[in-house]
Length: 240
Ligand code: 5RP
Image 1 (cartoon, protein in one colour):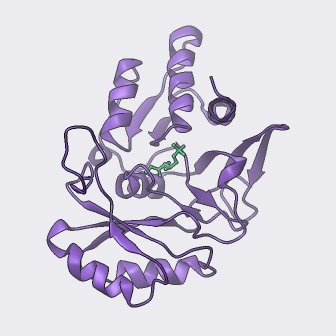
Image 2 (spheres, rainbow, N blue to C red):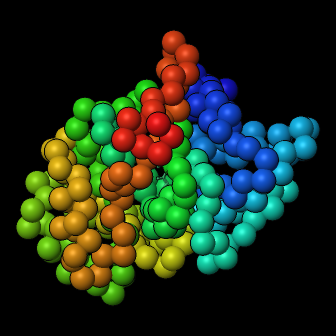
């Protein structure tokens, strides 16, 4: 395992201390939370832990099913005890950019239904100002051109439909989300000083399904670095 992968694994596993018997847990998407899900599977198998998971993507569903984690659909729950998920960036206010894996819409629905949300991340995700990572926006394919046009009006960098990049697809064939949407990646640069305002502005654009800014949702970050794992608790969050 590479050093980067080891850091992801450390953060992913450390977050499991928040997992308790009987919980309904939102299972995030990505290469860091994958380790949380694998550890939950191990705890169920070896320690008798019982939880029910709500997957935030089809890839997470496949992983959880392979570990025999019982699952229910988002539509079957009114509330979850906890969501654990990764992030592409987080700032000092615990605001996040998410959607690198294209699962932002389900991730936000599940996180918003949860009593608390914990992010698992390595130190590379910590930033002073959000925006170095291109902000992902899910959009209706039929309206993506007009969404791009509007965002181009205020985004300083490139605004582009994400390509699939998958083998067997044509070059530049769009990436399609689990919901049948496109992802539009917006190059703001580290300029997102008011993420709440930006989220509101983009959400109002016709054809936008969801914005990859998560504001006031994250309660703690389980952060790994070469000096170990640190838990940053949001002073304004629900774990405080
Ligand atoms: C998927 C996400 C992921 O949580 C985010 O991209 C972080 O992934 P990773 O842990 O692989 O860096 O938002 O939509």
